[in-house]
Length: 432
Image (cartoon, rainbow, N blue to C red; front, side, top):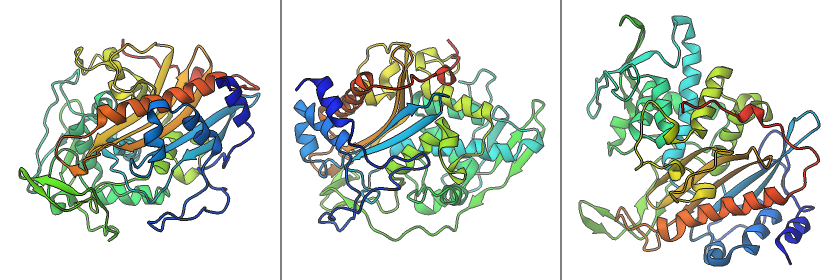
């Protein structure tokens, strides 16, 4: 059967269509796995698409649990008035199946930072206001300037730029400190992103107590006067006691510890929640009001610009050729260094650490008039050892991500649409 015939044969079979949330009307859960987890039935559209075109990825798909693969895919159709209608599909999705989210947690944190700034506008503060970070607890570091900014001053805006352009970890840490651990988690729970646990900074190995304490910050006007001052914060939040152990060993102080690695206190958020966070900023009216981030339209477009802007298009910071445009666009492009056609834009946040690779993306092709949302995660660590720097990103991860994106892109090109989308809203003005 030819590819376009496969596509058409799959079209009548859909799972869990919803305009307000993901997988909220599925049929009864199928039999639980050996772990005791109850799951929703898979979408045959996505399952068959992946399997019919799997080739070299057949091993991954047949061992999806071992690779901890999850894929979520949202079709977008437009009504005559261009209003979007969403149909959600999933493969091997399970809210209880832990994966380390790595830098993907930067997406909700950036949105929460802008939401908090919205509350501070009465003090004459916006995303470009200079923010000084000071210290009052062990393990903390201060920030008084940022030479990569056009004015040399650190700000929420500049941190968000670096988060989306090159996934800068220090930028995330400064937003984590601006918000505070307790604020972050309570805010996400209030929005019903209940799978989330954001408990630590990134790339800095600090004890739990030091991650509970966050720095004092000051927001200053152009003359250096303090507009807003926030004292250091201490979180008393209690996290779930559920234990999560992965692997058969881990490296510590150059020694192999023959025990599974404990992720119980690490950051966590389900792929479904990440997918919905992305949908909420792309199409705010498509999710429940409580799930939206209360940011201005100007701030929303600022986020969309830098989610989709390529590093080569940035003026501040400037990046050399060692940072290529596709380096943060795993879905559809993998880790290839080829230039991305400018008529294709990917609004996304990628993450990778401890052998986990994850990408949450909205893909738009302005020439072919297609759009879709796809999120995927895979665990690339066949030796089962954590922190040995011998992960299988190149052997399995990057190519699988590219494969998932390409399969869905080809499907979308072939799929019939009653009304072509007007994608003008997502045409951003970039720095270069």
